[in-house]
Image (cartoon, rainbow, N blue to C red; front, side, top):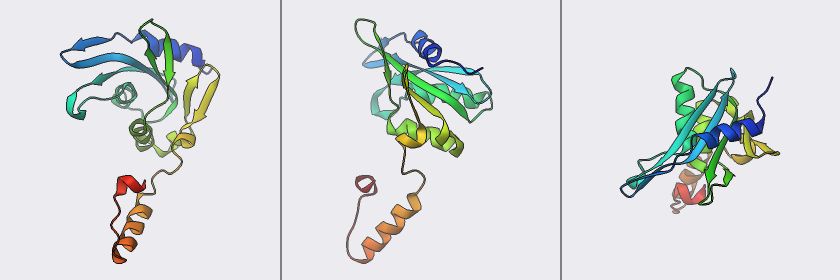
Length: 154
């Protein structure tokens, strides 16, 4: 039996315990990931200076990988506003790519965007893994005297 989106959203919400540590905020986003084998892994975000923190999705996926799995069926991230109302978040680009890199088969995994809104990772990351094409394009442009910034082009 497949776990319902509502249950995963509630589990992700259950780990949200916002805390300030100096200028940093931790725990204001929670994540639940349902692994291919049916185990739920939870994580929270940790926002720190100099980009050393990580998203809740990274944390939950890290828990999943620690238990020896790399494929997931569903994932959801949730944030609470100042009134305590939970809001489902879409994964950032870094998280999307992280999910893909764990296993290319994750491109078929479901990203929960709401109780009744689900998309596959491949819909949120349509141009994946084609970095060699970007470098080939940049090399051709360089021969013509153009220099492209990889990040601006992608």
